Image (cartoon, rainbow, N blue to C red; front, side, top):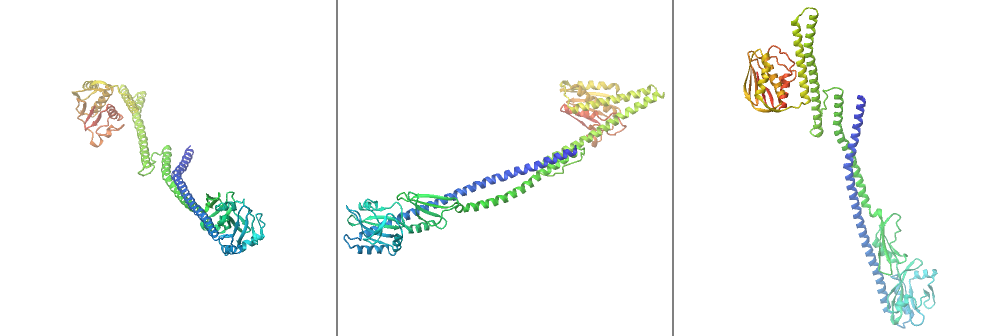
Length: 547
């Protein structure tokens, strides 16, 4: 059974240690983890805002540069158109156009078209040499060899917007590019003198360079037409990993400029913050686990000591103590437990002494009565022997009655209080003992009318007077004054060092010949006085009861 109890305590301790550790870890780490996640989310949100703000700035810059590039091209083409003279020799015009295309500049080609009621007619054209070679190799459906300019040229008519819009006085820019081999061109046109038209193929390669300068090395920017066809790009390939992307309308023919960058690269500071947070959380977890086990040990250790002490008390070792000396609540609990153990030890000691005293007090009259009866049976004793037996039996009866009184008082008796004349009660009680008094017995004074249990107060007076008669030499005086009763004898009195001990059960003070009795009368008298809210004290050879 003891092993089973010990095993149960061990299991409880282990569970308590684990529970305390888990609770402390949860209390310490959950808020820390929550705060860490909140901070990381805030960092991620801030970084995303910064990335998007940076992308918006690049989109705005790219859009402005694209619009500026197209504007510069149309302005330059208008300036060329102003230099055209109506009826000028086509060769001179071609030579002037060649100056605009060689060395390579904005335009891949420049062409002068005569537009009227009749079909449009190409008058002069100049091309970059490499662009001319690329056209020869290309089999474009909207181009063919023109014998007048002796070059590959567009086969436009008056109905084509590039000629029709410019002939009506408008600047026209194609909505999408027209590639020839490796060349990426964009047809544009402006009005010329006399209702004629000057066209050009704008080189879009510089746009890719412009976008690359805006994008930098970590991003990708592309320019697309309304149908999603790529017009220009910063040069970097599309990202395989998830990317952060933003788009913006350029403001021409539904063109869209798009910027993108790898999410992992853009949020690299977040990843570094996460790594540091994980490292910090790991270190905090290790510290929390260590501190949790340390604190759990500090809490569970005293619990184990309390359990061991409880086991020892359960086995009957009432000297066992926890030995815990602490100033906190656990220390207070241990001290209370030790006080309880001391009280249990004292109760056990009192019980042992009680049994020892009772057995001793009962054994003496029983042994005496047995011996006397044996003598009577043998014909040795007579009536005087039976008188001694009767005295022993009376002593036993009185002792049993006193033990019953002690048991009733300790169990908690209910007093039957009523208005009582204290003086009259004391006098009637003393008169009960006068027949057996061998010394002078006097009663003096008068008392107040109090709420008392008459039977219990009479028991107090009888015990005190009977005790005084045992030790008195010549007289016993009983005095009543208001709420106080004094019982005085002219015996040897009680020494000061024993005046409290005589009220303990089975306590006797040797002040002369050993008196009869078990030493319970004074203890019973004090308890009854205290039940009335009063007190019983000893002043040498005088006992004082105050109600």
